[in-house]
Amino acid sequence: MPSADELLGAETVADLARCLARAGDGIAAQETRGCGAVLEGLSFTERVTLIRNAVLADLPSDYPAFADVLRVALRDGDFTGWMIFPVTEAVAVRGRDAFEPALALLAELTPRLTAETAVRPFLRADLERALRVMTPWTGHPDPHVRRLASEGTRPRLPWAPRIPALITDPAPALPLLDALYRDDSEYVRRSVANHLNDISRDHPDTAVAVAARWLDAPAPTTTRLVRHGLRTLVKSGHADALTLLGHSPDLPVAVDGPHIRTPEIRVGDHLVFDYAVTNTHDQTAHVVIDYVVHHVKANGGRTPKVFKLTTRSLDPGETWSATRRHSFKPISTRRYHPGIHAVQIQVNGRLHGETPFTLEC
Image (cartoon, rainbow, N blue to C red; front, side):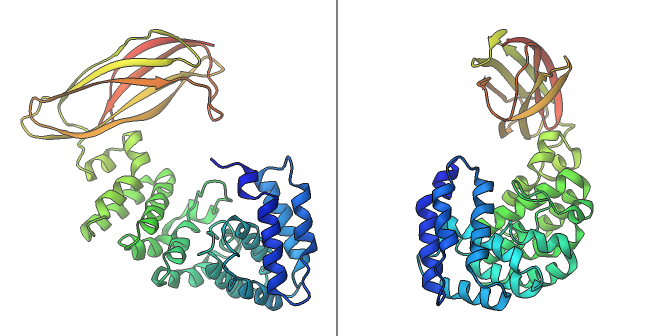
């Protein structure tokens, strides 16, 4: 992942200052230009806030004049990339009392860099009003604007403020997804799938019902979209999601393993295990094979984490076998604790076997 300096470094800020100065008569963009000297050691979020405030200081305080400068800047091919991120955040601040015009400006800016974070204050302030503006975006000729309708309304968009109203009830945003799930752009469809996955975390039955409705009126790309949108439910073994995708939880299979080759490991090592799955049915079986690692917690309990293995079809009597290497390399999102862990195989949501192994720190 790029560093904060690579995304919003001194050179990018200098380029932004030049774009703003060219766009507005009498605008020196001194505050923006000065940001480049004080970025060292700041996180990406801190840089965005600093530059956003500088842009607000450099540009006119009344919204119409502020928006005019940015629309002139949009004629400049250099006004693009990560410099746009703090600009869209500035629109969200200055446009607070210019609700519809500010959202329209964010739609104009989003082809230069997504405004998915900047639309969220408007959704949080007045969901119904914001959705009235955003719904027509689903028919916009630019895929970046169409994607903004889906991505901007995701209830749990990563690294952005959540939309509590849509977490409570995702229904108001569903018409946008209904309009976009057959979109010609993979970029847009991927966003729709991720939005559906967000819904599945709080309203799994709603997500499955929406997916089923789309599969009843599909495009050639719909099955793939639905699989991606229901991925969290599949990993958690949600029976209706698995059944909808053709992976019956009640499918008769025989599971051999997991057989652990490395019963004692240290942080930094790999857990290595073998497994085999046999279709014992008299018809072809469509299986989703995952594995679950039960990590030891600080209090001595254990917590499961599901990891992907494979999705495949097995003929009657056919066996799929493989060896898996699972890394215990230290990562920032997980802290390992010593003790007796365990691993299981999961087939179509059903758990099989439980083999212990010891982790030493």
